[in-house]
Length: 468
Picture 1 (spheres, rainbow, N blue to C red):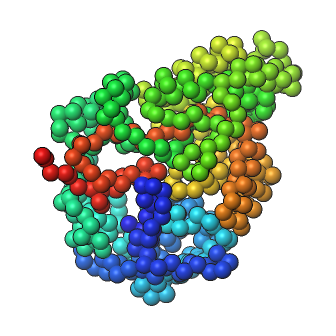
Picture 2 (cartoon, rainbow, N blue to C red; picture 1 turned 90 degrees about the vertical axis):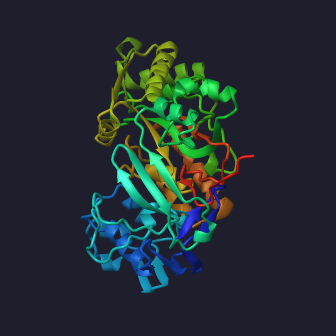
Picture 3 (spheres, rainbow, N blue to C red; picture 1 turned 60 degrees about the horizontal axis):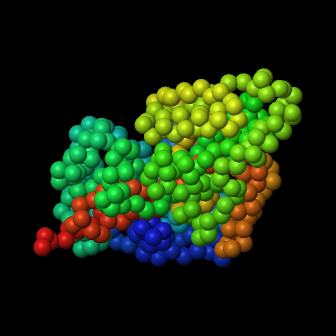
């Protein structure tokens, strides 16, 4: 558990932080910690936070989420080896007080502290526990790990040293590792599982219709978007009209109804609806004539005839859903634009490597938010070097709007972010497809689950109703 926690309704609550004091310029945070312990009964202190954050920012430490600590003063410089870790803006004043200095105001900083990269780790200095160590793994949350058998199960017991242990009503959790989605569903139907679904155990697509009819399938909006990215450095997607043609041709409603089928919302922008108070439609869905109009404008600007337009390669990662989506888009672009599209599916690791190295023309991906703020999606386009900016799109005016938003609050900040999203979509370096939902099944007697908009499941308030 971290300093703060994200609740199921998207609100933020103090977790290990008893009190948070923020300076007038919003660049200094003082966290006063609750008295808490690790799962072996040893004290958890502010020094554990300082050591953990600095370890992530060490140039030698490999982490795909280290950029989330860049709001700390000198955080990015330290990661690049341009300054000492001693210069990073985090300091434990004493065991219960953590002082944090930021590079600039960061309106969503407390949302960041709810993410695991900001959690404390029980080590000091260079004593880094190895991920595959056999010794006891210390934790500070409501449950503690008791068994982890690869490809079999993960077992947890209630942590008696958890600071809010009186709140926890179940004695433990057994997570079964199951390779096949259909097998997991069968075990649930047999009563061998109490919960299945979400990001870790998706519901089989071919079972969705029947489950919907029975009204047993539960869902909630999630901070996740499925989209396509263009390699804008490569012909023919170096032309904005061609990109718009491919984007406007897509029938998103047909995709959500017939392909994903998981209560998903049509997306015309990258930012999930759950991160906004008001849904904005940036363009109308499935505009065939407008798509053709931009297609021929693009051909004219590129100086080629329709017959000279090349065959396009569409890259995706292998899964039943992603393949169905790829085939659907292939048909749409053939029907509406008369463009030939070759499909290239690979396993996820290879697909991501291909995106990072720009070895693609159109790439399919799904983004899930790490923290509860629009910036988590918009920051990915702030520069060519930005995290997950696979297409290498960049616009100085967009960057200016994003940077200005750090110094604003409330409606003024939201207006700047909306302007930035509009600017992004005017150039269309991506094709937003749909914002997805967290879809799951649970034992009707299981109550009190907390599922955050980021798709995190918390069992700290879970309990079973007694059988009648």
